[in-house]
Image 1 (cartoon, helix red, strand yellow):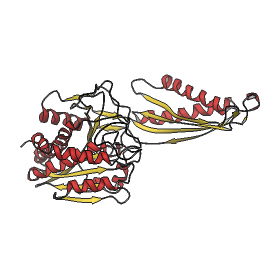
Image 2 (image 1 turned 180 degrees about the vertical axis):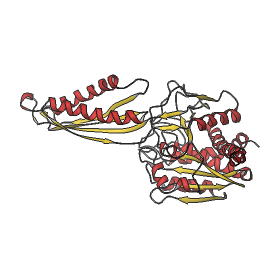
Image 3 (image 1 turned 135 degrees about the horizontal axis):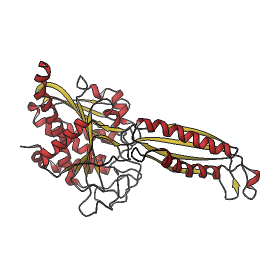
Length: 407
């Protein structure tokens, strides 16, 4: 039985697990109920299982029937601090928490892959590491798991690592997409506190207005980006918060704003930090004020290994036939902490369209929306691709290993 056929046979179990996770989502690094459900889903399988000490992670190792290296498969498990606005029978029961990014699907698909590969354990020319990760949404869960040894769980470091992410819009349902090189951006945070001098709103000349200077900084940052950086190595700076003042007729002492900064190259990541700090300092000085700046380095660029990206596409074509996988023409400005894994292990990150059939991918609510929905029909396909990537990658290595040894 092929992986696709076997995955279809377990569709009901995958849907049941996904709905259970969706109903009781958990946010952050500590997901005790989610961890319990994953352990239950893996119960009875011949896996070497360890759980995290600083986070509710699950690492499971399947030893293959023949000796060989290992391949890592990763699925993230955490939800978002979002109140769901969907009328679904399995909608979130917890206000302020929702699987709005599809991690419940990733978890179910990875658990399904563990079952699929276990059934063909004797064929595996090596081991498979299943990485069930909390804290992807800004908590650096992958970095924590690497620190706790997930990359060394099977012994030597994996020869390849694969991750997957469902998309609720713009990508048609059932279509896989990836690309070589950068596929998702680095995400950093730029925080600025403008120090002025308070006063009466009717007499701004007797004060130093930090709100006016802060607004000038926000506008100038957009101009600086378009006039400093090559559009073919893009940089995005978006101010998401701006706070200052307590009354309409009071000029405050200070104002504060925060921006997300997205880049695709190490050079621009360093340069944009320097230029942003210089810019706000210069504007503040021109107005007789000062600024305090913080630049928080977040997730690095997610970079697909060209060989592994092509391998993922070839594997998808062989599994599902032509037309189900395409090479994305450009990367995505979102960010991913699977980037930490890909910094140390060659691999590929793959997107999977999961827009429900009654919605138009061009207009459907995107991931992170309280109205985002993901179609259960993609669960078997995701599980099958996870399993096939590990199985085929180990087989390919076994096929070339004698030639390499004799070279």
